[in-house]
Length: 138
Image (cartoon, rainbow, N blue to C red):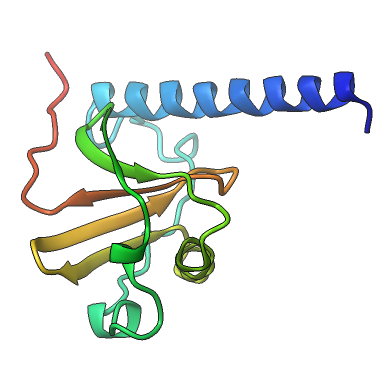
């Protein structure tokens, strides 16, 4: 690919991420079930529950070996890592793919975490269970 094609591709991917974030926020603002007509509602399988022992047993991958940065998402406080060259990042990303994109109940020293990744797979996010999730304003 030429440099211009790479830039165009990157711009399109950024635009897709922005559309995805806006759609997610709109659904949250509309409430838990924004669709009255079930034939229009998107059909999504619930995220599979993964037992913490199968996810983080101290040998498969270790979140302490990744560099985390504090951030703020549409639903509140979170941590994010973009360390794509890190072996632990790759192991976690693979596990997220196998788990349908979300891993719940990962036990760490300071609490339980929910992990998920960006659509492009260049970021992994985590939120501690007891961090307050922002409610949509009425």
